[in-house]
Image 1: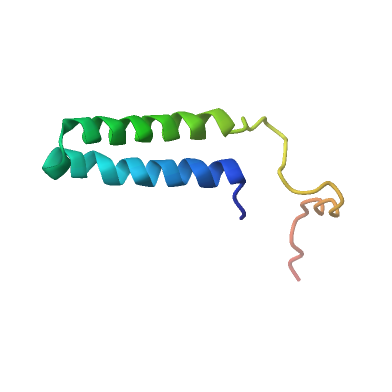
Image 2: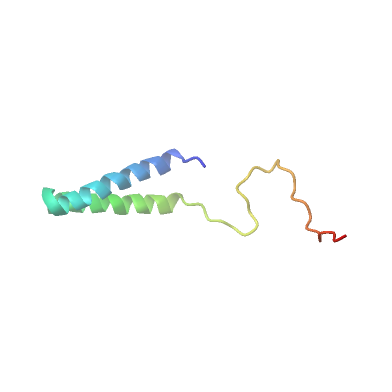
Length: 77
């Protein structure tokens, strides 16, 4: 399953924030920690904004595929 460019950037932003947040808490100071946690929140909000809602009965596959076979009972001989 492929990813879009937006998903890639939001993942990168989340990873940078995930790195800066704890590093700021442990060594670099509160300002860096706040920036890191802010980046994580921004990335999560971005992921939520590009999420497509799934409607019942819709599919994400292309429409040119063959229709599924009708269900039928197995034969017992």
